[in-house]
Length: 177
Image (cartoon, helix red, strand yellow):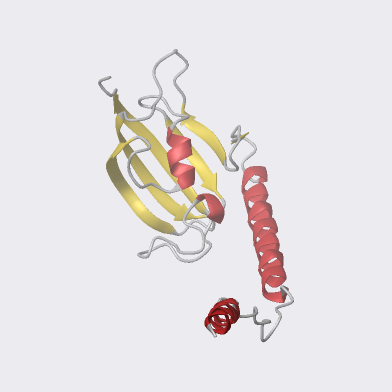
């Protein structure tokens, strides 16, 4: 009788420990939304690059440079002598104007103090500032993904807006190591 109780308990334990079988998904997505999103972004990218190319072609007197990270720029004021450029942690002060690539002014005669790479700043401008020396001015053309992208700045810049930014790096105060 004792063996029967043990067998019954063991049988109960074996069957009660069985994990439930995995459920199959109720619907299978084909990836069509993702494919449509990729196509939409490709078309947006092509359109923006054509607009930027047209701007560059319409200004043959300016020497435009293509950055490694995907934006274009030209110097309005270039400092030829060897001097410092912003590095991580440096305190910089810069002035800027921001407009759409159609020329509509968004922010005019603005200025900001910024700790390099330690505060929020949109990707293109952060990378563009690293190219400047004190008192240099450059005009940057940023495709929307290097500007504020899908979200905009939640103020004056909307969704997927490429930007033209004229930026003057006024001063650099180097970090104290």
